[in-house]
Amino acid sequence: MARKKKVKTSWLKILLLFLFVPAAVWFGAFLLWFYWYDINNIWSKPETGKRAQPSAARQREQQDGREGVAAKRAPERILDEDRKKLDEILRRRN
Image (cartoon, rainbow, N blue to C red):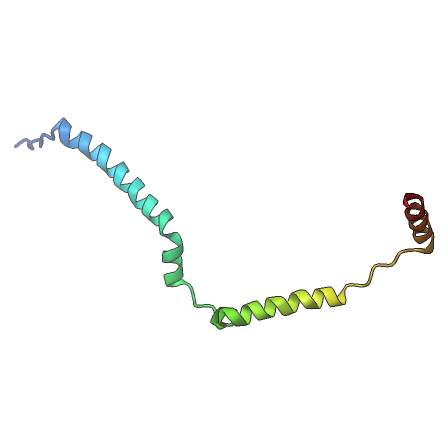
C-alpha cells in the first residue's frame, strides 16, 4: 500500500492565520458597531407623520403645547392664614 504524503505547513503561515483572522473579525465587528445606525436605517421602514413636517411647524406645535400647559395649570392660592402671616412679616420689615 502506498502511503499518503503529509503536506507540510510552515509555522509562519499558521502564525499569520492565527493573527489575521481574529484581527479581521474584530475589525468587521468594529465597523458594524460604528455604522450600526446607518445599516439599521437601510432595513427599517421610513417613519411617517411628524418626520414629514417642516421644522417650523414642529416648533409651533411645541410652543402651543407649552402655552396649553400653562393655561391649564390652576392658579396658586394662598390661604388666609398664610396671607396674614406674610402681611405681618412685611409690616415688620417696613
